[in-house]
Image (cartoon, rainbow, N blue to C red):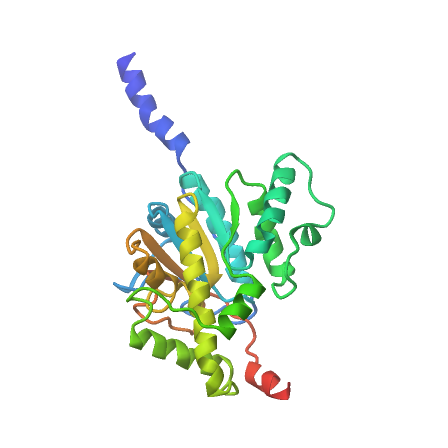
Length: 295
């Protein structure tokens, strides 16, 4: 009998855990034959790791920050996959979205309660007051999955009124990591570049304040959220050298954070910007600056 029980122990362990399921196939049209496609790289060492290794490592972190390119469908498919695989490794405490504002939180909680009770809203977009600036065709599957989960779905952004107030009267940012001159200079340069050089210099300080207060809010919400917590936001927001992790450090939580950036093949994140980068297929290139100049 003792021998039989000893033989059963490995089988029981195998039943309690499983390897991760294969990641979703590429959706975006470009880069399907690129050598980087599907690679997951640990930036500090340059080591290529497997999806299984990534999930196992992220599952140990109290806080996971995932950076996306908002319009890339592969990034949203991988976020959904990652949500499922992490939950299979350990209970998830909460999920936070840049795409949700505080004034939507009560709606999210109401809808989540109804969905858990088996009552799916006729119009989920209206029920959540989902903002049209975030393409529901890209975010819908992920959000609907999260609404069915036992853990809370949380807003991580600023309300529009808060943004306007910051723009008009810039608050003083507390902390040394986020206010370092090199950090603020790089952020200002990115603001200029992202606005194609069309933004007047007089507006740069206010835009910087908004950017950093958004990052501070994400850090605050991430710290207050039930753990393990995962934040999904634009890749620039989650950068270790410029974004939310600096604010976490200023708030006394510099440890326990892991950053994964989802990047299109051919784009090389800075070595100190993340812990891991996952290379995906790419959207067809567009000249966004040309469109902006026309406006």
